[in-house]
Image (cartoon, rainbow, N blue to C red; front, side, top):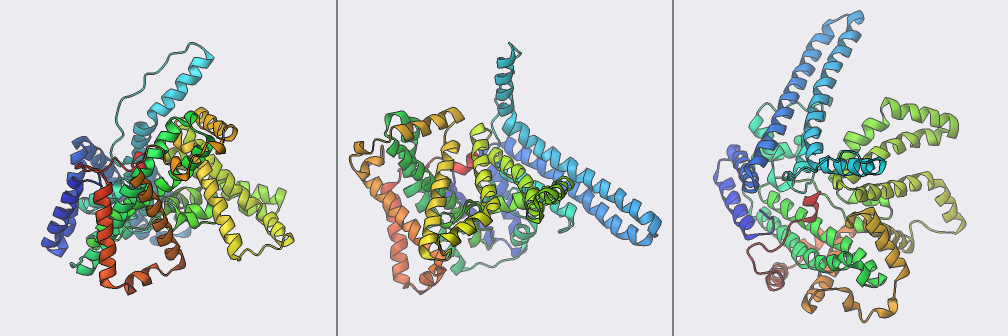
Length: 526
């Protein structure tokens, strides 16, 4: 069921109506039923798989909780000679339970998502070494939302292991959190202690919240249909046949793709956050004006915020603060001084973070290269921070000046777009071929008019995309300045409603007229 469809609109209206008809203490049951129906609509097998993975983690969390409680009651009664051994024993049990659950859940995800990736690489290597036995690729379909709910489950088990909060004893409530349909296809990545409490907390109907939620949903639909889907026409046409277009067109396609991805992904977040807001359920924000970032590191603190936070908590810190990371830090301190001693554990952890980030986005070497490029940019910035500071001092550059900040924003945006050359193409060979064609066949003289960049688009769609892009930039700029909410609150009621009506009219006039207005969202493929 597409989030942008009349089917989903009817589904959301029915769920919202039932949600507020039920007593407050039982409303989470409506959400649970809606989750199961949403999955079953895509296929009953998806419900069975997520049920199995959730049940494994549920049992593991209960066992962890029991072990923690047993340790808390037993350890204080022991003397010093027995306390250390008992603590190690309890820790070993916790590690075994947590590790078994995490590897079981992650193993299912890895097998389903990455089997063909490993098989293709094995066949390539075997074919080059000798006439080795070739493995056939598997034909299974990647289950709905598995890349997202797998991380939700892993985060929950690890949090219980760490004692961040007690395990949930009601499986139905835990299953409601895992399968919460607004966040399961594209995120955001949620934490049980935050989203769980929000889902199960009693909440009264609010007309103000209804209006705010609907306005945000409308804004998300506007982004998706009038910007992302329209730009996709040109982006696909250019990159699918890049050899037929001057390099200048490919550069335009590169920038257009990044705008398309932002409008698509943030549009989805606006829709699901708006819908959840109507119910009084707060989803974590996933974007904070990412294209105003002044470095790649800052960009990733603004783009897909919850994914970055997940990797920071469950990959970066455990590795950088672990035995190997700290050992590397001590060696680096002896060789390169205190600064290197602090940086090296982080560099070591970032290798795993960006390898995992690249592979999470897609089972393809192009995503690994894309991840490595981001890693290189972030590590070089950290390593050369003092050198950059000296250069700016010598050149009398004021880091707080408006011009310097604008330069850094433009530079970062160009780098982000350049890196996506590798994520948009199906193979590294084609990505480098595209870059080569762009560099050696720029052919600026072949550009007839700015409108010619919008390959395959009708004139009205071109105007809609330009208008929508300018509107997104303006709203983001006002949000970055911290005055957007004030402007909305102080705007006359009539003016706000005229703006909403205009958006509805534009969507109706410029979108397809079928029952399903668009294809899927881009991040759902990850």
